[in-house]
Image (tube, rainbow, N blue to C red):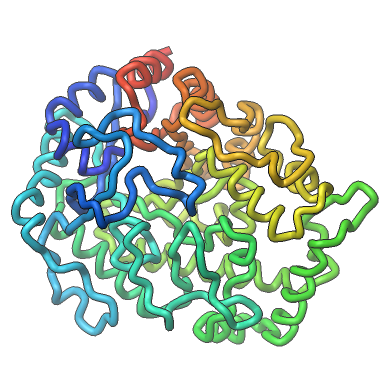
Length: 446
């Protein structure tokens, strides 16, 4: 059997107990788990769990009730006492341990030790560019560290809270965080970093980064910043007009806007640099596993698989397919919502499923609704990612999602399992009913 991993966030070890969680997963043949360095408690004034995903995810409900609820508001605290000396000089500082830390914090360390004792590999997952980094919902990015568009404005209301990858402060904080985690949890096998890129959930996010720190890198690269700004603004408008009678949207559009192509090149540079610096922050014996979007979305997020894969021990390709219609629907509406746009976006990004006629046809699925993403599309995207990685193809993992009805979860997992040649992670335990765990276990055992 290959790698069968499950992301188990700390609240499940708290709510269900360490051994019951691990018993279920070990029985199913799970080889790897990932968790995070925080603890949680219900709080009516806190953030929604499961996440609201920009409001569209409010339909989401947990399969496994958390403290008796399938959706609730929560707060978190660090699970350990950070070594503040590691953050000396950083404008961002780690959260301060509090009563919740004292009461529940040891759960994470005991969970890691118990999983290691059963022969499982264990990873910690944190956010790459969202201080304090434990969960995306609790972003505290400073305004001066935000990425900017060609109009010198940040993008508000995003699903992600990412900072500019050119920010020295954010890089210093995340590097310190990885060193801190390696010291606090020396038994873990590695760290997974989420969103070490420019997440493309929002159409305007595609045109970040004109932050002052990013423009310094552009100058060093020989990029004409004025042309980059002018062409990026132009291509943003050009996308609202059909280029062909069919209304096609293709990457070839950039041939007429070299400055916009320079922006993509700059974003790739910033992403590669950011990941390599984080690799340097971890001890050599701990793996670094960045996670990214599947082709071709990774081209727009700036994640250069070919350049990053050789520098790290693994790369997660995320097939969180409930997000695909959310992304394309947001883009379609941002592009004016004309009928031709929905079909053109569907053709360009090949998510599988029926071709939409309008932006309203991009629908975030309810818990009992199958995802429109096709199995063939999932396989093709994973194959494309492996081809891009070349000799490092076996470092790639397919990350599938447990959200959705049983049959559809298994269908999507099977596509990921086969296309990744048996290197699959499942996100997240809270959506894994006992029936799903059993079915996925049967899948990976063949």
